[in-house]
Length: 141
Image (cartoon, rainbow, N blue to C red; front, side, top):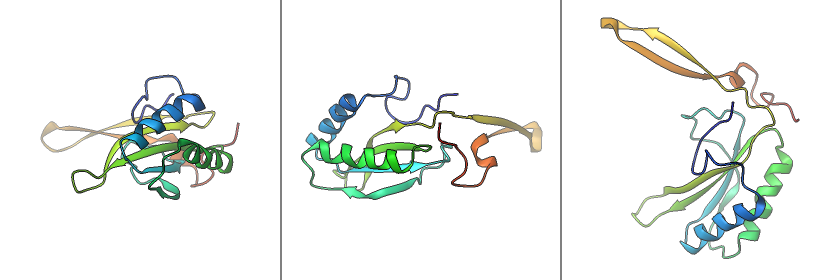
């Protein structure tokens, strides 16, 4: 199963040149960029681990790519994403977010159905990855 989260999620994985093109756009817009990683890609898990601090006042996307590659090297079996924040409205809003690395094997999710009061039906997603302890959910390929 291929996780589809963030901008460009239905496209094939980006090459480094394509990532740089997106970083250039974000930097031209004045958006700070951060790199994050996780082993629990559940759609409601919005709090991924940060790789360093958000990068403010950058003008060269090569510096961001350097951090992306360092995160990829340190966590080869995790999801890694890039976020760009727009603060023009007086609050930090994610303007651009996309995955730059995936584990070799993506186990996916199961859908559980639950019948509740008044014949209502509720559905919940559970990540197969969370059946293993944090930090051991994906094995390097």
